[in-house]
Amino acid sequence: MARAGLLLLGLLPVSAVPGGCPAGFGRPVRGSPCMICPEGTYSPEGEMLCQRCTAGTWSDIRGASKVEECHKCSEGTWSSQEGAISPEADLSTERSVTKSVS
Image (cartoon, rainbow, N blue to C red; front, top):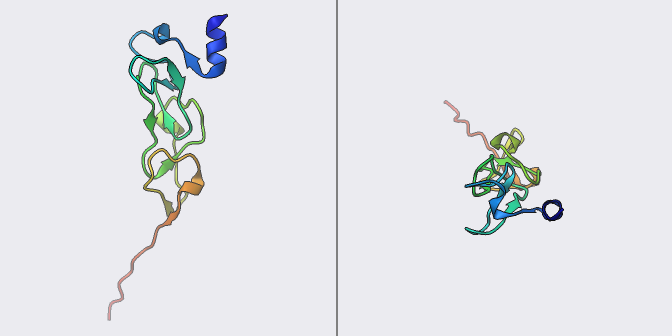
């Protein structure tokens, strides 16, 4: 029952997964309980930390467990921000440069 209560809060006891956290969870501080990864991050099974989605991607999924849950920015947009939580973070617009040949 205690574990079910912790899961509802997004926490797991430190001993829940030996050496790491369950998929979609990470520890914000060494020795702390595993906590659900926030939007803009992911964590595979057994990892200790939630990893940020890379620049050019975003994720609105809380508890993401794989890098594939980080979505690529829309065509023609780009974000240098790591850990973006929405496509609105893709504020930079790609500009194509053309040279005119005379």
